[in-house]
Amino acid sequence: MKKKANPPELNKMSHAEKDALILTLLARLEALENRVPKTSQNSSKPPSSDGLQKKTRSLREASGKAAGGQAGHIGSKLERMAQVTETVRSPLPQYCTRCQQSLAHERRNCMIVGK
Image 1 (cartoon, rainbow, N blue to C red):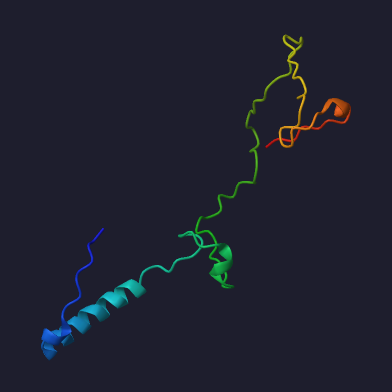
Image 2 (cartoon, rainbow, N blue to C red):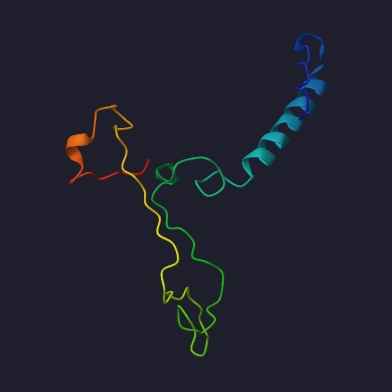
């Protein structure tokens, strides 16, 4: 990152030097203003700050194919086993993980919600 330059002492500068400084600063200002404006797509701004202008559509051209799986594609899936090889039992917790209250009376209607 560039180090900030110390501001020049204007009272020691001639009018020509001041005019040159003003022109340089105006050129820098114009270059900064011509940069791509920040939107929610290229910065961390929320989408609500983009305003009401329409968003540009994708520049990609349509391929002509139907959406989804294509005809003739051989799919694969996890097949069901003919015989069960292993049974995993998950015991219910004894206490609520949030409030530490006993769940002994809630065995029938116990529903464990993920984090």
